[in-house]
Image (cartoon, rainbow, N blue to C red):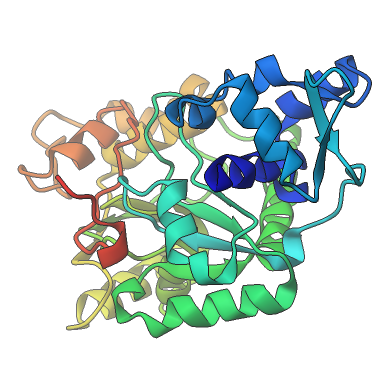
Length: 338
């Protein structure tokens, strides 16, 4: 019974209701009440083999919930009011593909997590990051300390979501401005691209746990980066530098380093660069550079990608398939028992 009561209180909590549109909609349809028959369709209560009697008895033990006179519906005693929880939410990336929100709840259990989520793709695969919401900012700070104390969590970075969300909004605004500039630039020569040619490199064999911001910051130290095409957990990336000289400086300096978060920075062959650009910029599909049409078959060798690097080869052939992230290091608490 305590488990059912705890689960019901979670369903009606501020943290869950602020994100669960289904419950809000059903309550609006029933004058602020949620029918017991709908609760019985929830997977968690199904797994507890819950009955209407179990739910009614659990509500009677709760100080947060109440039943209607007929005993057929439930609601909060204190009505729900939407609040901003960004300043007490942390964001973790990257996460191994076998992590669930139950794992995050269990790890932070001493601090009483208000809400945890591990977003998934339509295919059911996790996206490689998660959110944990606490009851207040002070508890969130304790959660950050708890995470950092465990050395097994090195490489899985924490961010306060209010700060990270601001970064994402700024990036979204920047991307919109880039697209706007691209649409306005209609009078360019059809013999080339809007950006200088010969400025794109591929980053090979990236360390599994490195995140986008850290990878860009590392490369930026050796050459001015115009754009980085990378998804957390992917073993390769493409980086476009501001100009050819920046690209040459970066490749020369980085490839001489003994310690770096990837194996090699390799310049694309002109035909590879054209094939890559053709897949990321619709306008460039129409405007094939005449200079590349004259490249002979002998010149059109795969100069950058190693033969065993099939994933990278598929990329330059134009498939641009998104491969699932791979992780060599998994936190102990996240490992599933087989």
